[in-house]
Length: 241
Image (cartoon, rainbow, N blue to C red; front, side, top):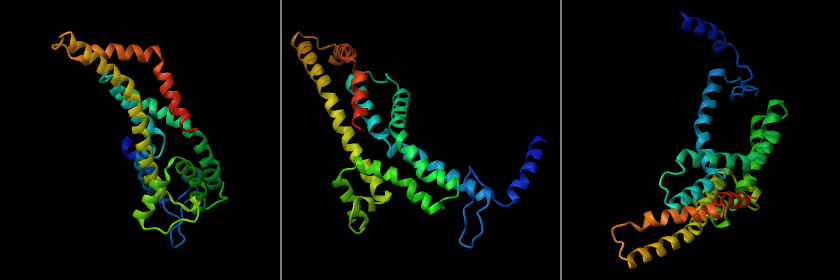
């Protein structure tokens, strides 16, 4: 009975003309009629399914998560910190870095659209400009040229003419290279400790004891003494300034 009552209460909404969804004026179809609320909800849910991929790939989350996973592997702690902790830290750091960009997106695109000052096309164009500037700032010229060549698009006269279809994959490639470079640098001091410990254990005949078990406490102790988490996170944050 409760389910039936809810359906009856919702029936007028689904049959009524479309209103504002999330404070946005209803979208207009080619014939000039506004899209219904069910269709707007379907489009919104479709956009939400793409949101995790955007958050993981087109934000500092990509670089930060790669570096933190390299760091855990270099320490040899296996599952400490856990994946949930590393991903959570990466997410919060990414939100902190992207906060000014999101404010600009809201001020230039979403707010004028809510107030009816811009149509959807103009709001999208204005709202994506801060995102394009952010991606363009960290995407390498070589990767951008590769994406332009792959898409067979005409060479842009200025960086402002580049679209998200070119900037997004170029940014991902650039962040992958940067993350692996930082990860390789982090590996070096811990690799030296592993080599030294392995040489010492083999020279004294401790062949039954894996060198990794002996070197792990020394690596963790070194990381704690130099305040490694503060150094790594601080360096990552400064790399986006």
